[in-house]
Length: 383
Image 1: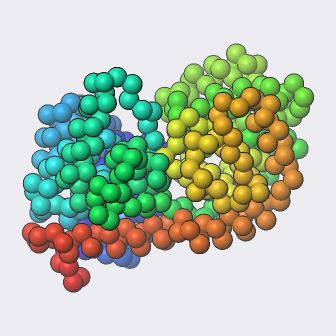
Image 2 (image 1 turned 180 degrees about the horizontal axis):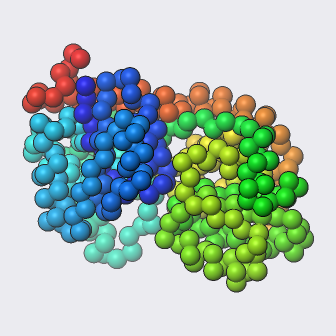
């Protein structure tokens, strides 16, 4: 049994968190035990759900700060407790865990998931350079969910900084296409069967730019009254977005349904997924939507690799005028859901974007690291 400790800020539902949940479920018969260390807030019901699926969750809120983060790393990175530590996304805490892991003889995976805006001040640039250097110097393995995420966290030439550094995409569990779910979900949400529904899935943060989708909806209603927005997800901007919908006069056309364990019924209710994101490390919801047969209009912040059905998925610059976005959204009426889903699922399988591929690659990486690391009461190389 290989004991993996995943470190992450919170379990609030987002792409990284959903991928980790999928990994826990897919690992049940593979001799992998996943524990998840939450650094910024209590796990709550989401933690209970992961434990029901076979994982383990530890709250280790340190209150922030360098010394507290070091203390947390010292407390949790011990060869008697874990075989591998897998750090997800957080910049400075990953550097600290990498340094402590090297000292303690525990392999550390630094996994980049996000694309951040570039540092603006000289001090911030110096800070980022130091953190990047420490991470690349001490982490055992550098992984990134996309080339862009790797460059953002590890530097532009990140693959040259460490032998074996590579992209490992976050794979998805294929959503089920269900016409009955489409009808039932729309009825539950009070959305007419004939309405055009633009959907968004993800954490409600500035990077997702959901406010732009609300503006597009308001503009569309000048020509097309029967248009709705369905927002699946939660986050710090939810209240502000609700107020924006009121200011735009579309509060009766917007449905905020919060974070959902099963997003498939909501994909079924959508006619098009719209992602005017400012920053994106990957784009799991775009992949899921296409595999559910939903066309997508996304910003160029999303990597090209998330485009599985090129005919029905459009990439636009986020700075393009609303009318350009609207024309692309309306054009999506031309495409059939079954055709989109068939094309997207084949592409996802061929490119290794399914959860089964993710867990197979992760397992191989974990075992390879343990073969190279000194054995200190953990998994043996030949197991």
